[in-house]
Image (cartoon, rainbow over all chains, first blue to last red; front, side, top):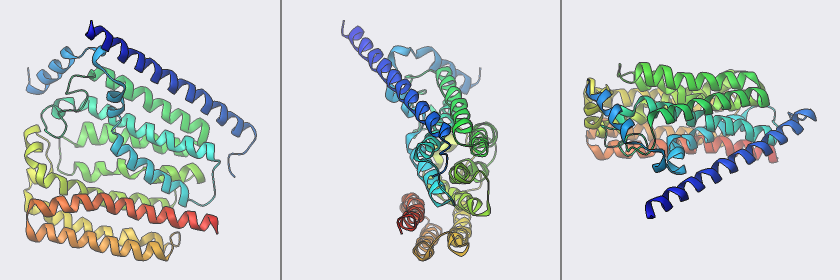
Length: 43
Length: 306
């Protein structure tokens, strides 16, 4: 049914958005850790 | 059952999470307010003495953006009943029935805590404390305490919108100084004439929702006088960064001209007493704040390059 298709599409977009945000956060935390461990808080 | 609790219950019952789009969650963060907050935070970060690693500077701005957005989401949760009544806000995700109020509260709370914790761990605790203060001030002092009780709501509540440049400054220096307080004071003085100009032609909307904005409680003439008063007070505060020595001659001249024009438009609102001049002042006030901070940012970038 079109309604179910629309629901699935929205759910897929939401899952992709959450996944993308989580991956971006992992990358950010990794970069912060490198900067902090190298003592380079100020340039 | 009161009208507002009936509205809240109606909103809750008609929401199913299947209806919610990603853009609705984004709308909960009040992206237009967030963009101004990020910009002023960036300027605070740029003009502060010293420097911050680009990754940490990005993290600080992200935390400011997320924290500001999160407080917006909590505000939408709390104000869902009056948002449903006002024309300006009735299409927001909660009153429109696309996001449930409890979902918005959870979303805002999680993001608020996450932004403060990340700011504290990655940048410094002073910036994190200021961010927590900003969120708390907007949610508890402005939204829950002042907004529905006093016409001074946006005067005192305006402090929440004025903190971001201080947070940016504190992210670099780790402290609160007179210079960052001046940046705070500029936005603090700018907020009343900005919102009162809006409320001059939206007063019926506010009255309908029972929000005691100044034109609703004290009338339009009193509001126009207050606009002129705050615009006059804004002038000396806006030029202060030049006299304190952390802004150059371009800012000194630019802020004088821009603030002079602000005062002239305020006087026009007071003299003409029409809707058109209030709309003109509202539009100009947005441009004013952007240009003022853009000049500060530009000068700071030029100093860095030279």
